[in-house]
Amino acid sequence: MPLSNRRWTPIGSFLLLAGCFNNASVTELRLQARAENGREWVEVLAPAQALPINQWVAACPANVQVLYQSPRVVSLGCRAPEPLYASYRLDTGDRLTIENTIQRGQEQSLQDAVNRYLWKTPLKQFRPTGNFALTGEGMIFPTPQGEVVVSSIELRPLLARETAFLIGR
Image (cartoon, rainbow, N blue to C red; front, side, top):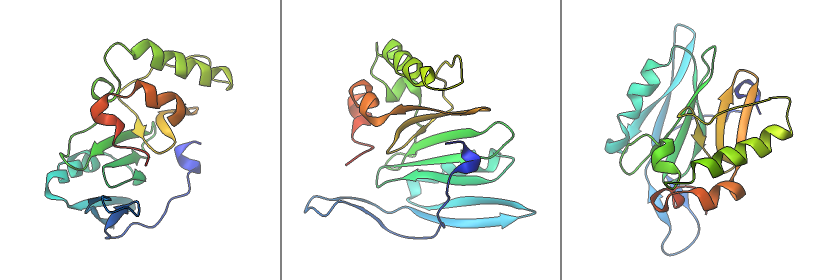
């Protein structure tokens, strides 16, 4: 679904809890909705190690929306003329890249999954880039014509061990 067609939920300060188990993963993600001069964005207030995310948000010339959030990862979208996506680990504040998300040697498998998705769309070709969001749906790449999605089912075997725990249950 294109960024412009996504249904956005209100942003506020809250505590995220994952699961109802004794060992539930908990990370405090506090966001504040901001608006000025017709631009809307979110500001990360906590956890402290995630504050560098605000640099990416500030660099976006357009509205910034939360695409996905969990106790371990937050994914953002910038509604610039060409949409920009980014995902960040909340425990370190590090931005996810293809290299630290996909297992080494699985790049062709990722391209194959993209090609299977493209086969069902009017898009003819797409090469995965660092412009992506990691979500519960999978890995989403924005394009001017719409999003390219590698489903979580296809993505899970490709994920690096360190990244696999970031999404899903």
